Image 1 (cartoon, rainbow, N blue to C red):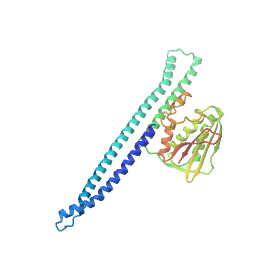
Image 2: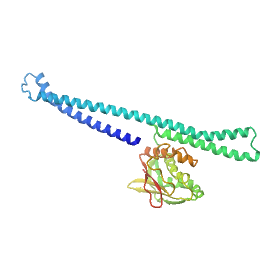
Image 3: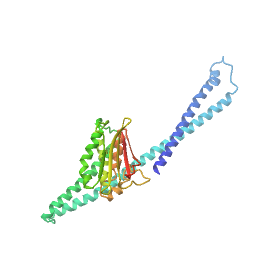
Image 4: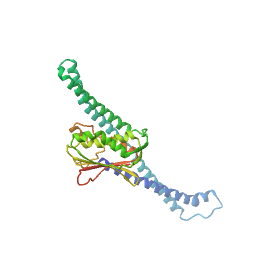
Amino acid sequence: MKNKKLLSLKNKIFLSYVGLCFGLVLLFKNLDYIYYDILDPMLNPNVTDINANTPSRWGYFILNILIFVAFALAFYRLTTKAIKQESERRLQEQNLLYAAIAHDLKTPMTSVHGFAKALSDGKIQPDEQQEIFDIIYRKSNSMNDMVNTLFDYAKLGTDGYKPALTEVDICSLVREVIAENYCDFEDHGIELDIDIPETAITINADKTEMKRAVTNLIVNIYKHNPDGIRAKVSVADDNGKAVIRIADSGDSLPEGVDIFEPFVTENIARTVGHGTGLGLAVTKRVIERHGGKIYVETAAADYTKMFVIRL
């Protein structure tokens, strides 16, 4: 609904801008009439040929001014409204970000605090202490991941951020991400089909950021789906564009929502105990910062969803 309202406002701004330009053209066109029919005879006594239609042209000229002013005011008001709405949207997103991160950090912090206090008070038996240390370590890693994700999302949203572009073989990068997560695919019983050409497909990209974006999608296959599903990862060259497709037969995506918006998937993520709903939002920002696109496409018959990255 918000996107539709914003689109409608953008259309109104565009139409008012077109009207503003049209009014400006008419205004300049009539300036020519005013000069030759009125100002020139007034300034040059030798000119005696005054057009009989001058009064009507004056009226037409004044009408053009009114049209121009009306469209100028409309353009100003709509633009101001759009800026205000965008500021409110960003503020709301920022507040939601703080609230979500605070909520997600509270649980592991409470656990770490409780276990540390129990260890300090000597309430944990020696043979149970190693297990508690492991829990504290996992919880602290979880908090570290949340903070890093928050930092990435905030960094990618700043105007001053520019990716450190180098030549990157996207085929090699995707294979590297798959290799790093292959044991997790096996642990979850996922049948993975890989279709990546041996020949290099080179793009200009920040390798660290691009790897993070691809990793988010690859990891989601086993983190946010039931065990034992099928998945496919492919890379191809489509008319000079590198295209990455990641499909799986797991849970279907929710309908009618933009899953790339922050926290849209947070409830699903929290249900299975992973993430803060920022993963796909970070991925989208990385791809768009590289001038690419990411979207969901209708998957083949064997799969329920497919993400497509076009660079």
